[in-house]
Every structure is written in C-alpha cells, then in structure tokens.
Image (cartoon, rainbow, N blue to C red; front, side, top):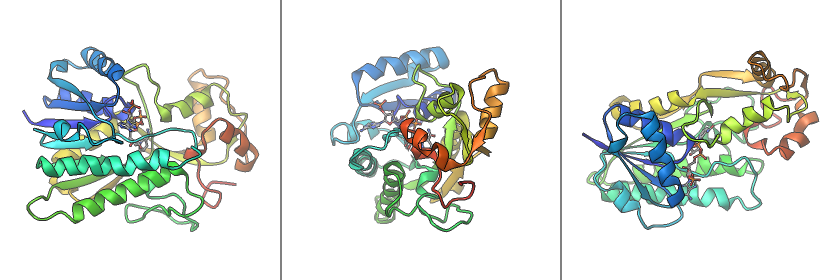
Length: 301
Ligand code: NDP
C-alpha cells in the first residue's frame, strides 16, 4: 500500500489525517518533535483505528535539518500539517515565522530529494484574507497583506505558503512534484487526544464565560474531520494539483455561537452582544486576538 508522511502528527488536524489514512488502508508515517508525544499518538490510534499497526512515528523538528530526509524516504505523498499555532501574540514574530517558513522549505527539499508524487500543505485562510484594508469578498486569488497590522500567526502562514509555491514553481521538470494547498477557516470538532487544540480553546473560553459579551464580529468554521477529508481527497485528486482551496462550512457571529452553546447547556456563554472595541482588551487578555477580524473588515464595529 502507498505510504503517506503526515508532519505534525501530534496536532489536532494531524491526528485526524492519520486516523483517516489508516482507516483507508494507507501505511502512515508521522513526525513528532518530542519522544513524549510518540506514545500518545500510538495510544490514540490503537483506540481510534483498527489499523494502528500500519503507523510509524519518527522525530523531526521544523527548526532542524536532521530527520526530514529519513521521514520522507519511501513516501509517495506528504501532508505537511505541522506549523506552530498559538493564541498568544509573541513579542518576537520569528517564533512563528521561522519554523513555518524554514520548516516548510525543509520538508519540501526532502520531498524533492525523495521524489514524492505530491504534497498537500495545510495553510490557512489567514494567508488569504488578513491585513487588508479594502472591504470585499476575498477568495483563493488573494493573499493576506503582510504589512503593519497583520498578526504574526497570519504572517507566518502567508510567508510559508508563498515560499512553498515559489519552491514548487522553480523545480526543474526532473524534480517536479505536485502541490495542493488547503486553507481552512477556524477548525473545531472532536479531539483524538486529551489536548483540546488551539482553535477549540476559543469555544471553551466562550462556553466558560471568560468573555463578558459577544463581540459583534464573525468567523468561519469547519469540522476537523472534513479538513482531514479535504487533505486526503486532494492528495489523490489530480484536479486539485496547483490549487489553493479554502475550506469552510459556515460563517457565524459570536452571538450565534454563544446561543448554540447556551442551548447545549453551557449557560455561562454570554448572551449579550457588544461592539468589538468594548471587549477588545478582554480578547487580548484572553489571548484570542488571532482569530478576530481587523477593524475595517465587515462585521466589526
Ligand atoms: P496544533 O497546535 O494542534 O498542531 C500543530 C502541530 O505542529 C503539532 O503537531 C506541533 O507539534 C507541530 N509543530 C509546531 N512547531 C513545530 C516544530 N518546530 N517542529 C515540528 N513540529 C512542530 O494545531 P492544528 O492541528 O490546529 O493546526 C495544524 C495546522 O493547521 C497548522 O499549520 C495551522 O496553522 C493550520 N490551521 C489550523 C486551523 C485551526 O483552526 N486549527 C485553521 C487554519 C489552519 P507539538 O505537538 O510538538 O507542539
């Protein structure tokens, strides 16, 4: 059976990719950057997949050269999911940008050296629709503006994705492999380990009443299982070669999310809606600035 490398095997999305690949009969290798995560992934797959024996876990860090050639060796496909994803806005943006950009290039170089058929890269809608001043509908033809005002996370995703396309476009015919990029909105859904995941944490904060009121702004959402499905579909479908694909199920205002949480029994979720700027400081304090739109974007006031 064909072998697939999933980078970032310990992550929220990575784990779902691994589970679905195993269930579809693929041999799967995944990377982690610490020994402690190895057993966690194996335990999760023993519980969640009947093909856990077809999983191999290897070590590789996006900030280091070691391990990447060995990780990619023998794989037909690579799902490059790993990238630092944190709610905090770090004082040094390179904490996010360096592993995102240099790590992507390390992975792609190893793919070139090992003649993989295709790479699917997990980018983000943060590489499409952020940092813009113009109010319009943004799509896969657009790139976030990495000038002043963009968050370090959105910048890291934009620069990493651009670096990937540049890398692939400059390959010689002999070295060529295909690339598809998936650009998800906020990803939520069931976890496959005890780690709640960065994006689910936002809903946890809303459900737990850590926001005094709902900012009058909105976000796109998609289920993590659909994101994994999109990666595997793109891996196999030639029609997606060379494409960026935004994946989003629905757009919701915070107050709609909060109502849904209330209906589900989370009575601390705020029912009141307020202008964004009134809860801005609280959002910063709660470390959830990354997901909120810029003041000039629709839905913000
Ligand atoms: P997680 O934080 O759960 O997963 C991130 C993964 O990247 C982890 O496996 C982490 O390893 C790994 N990683 C981080 N830094 C390094 C490094 N220096 N070297 C090797 N591995 C590293 O996040 P998600 O699963 O939610 O996100 C996965 C991808 O999806 C990211 O690229 C993110 O930008 C993108 N994305 C996520 C969205 C979301 O809402 N969740 C929305 C849009 C895009 P470790 O466990 O050791 O920290």
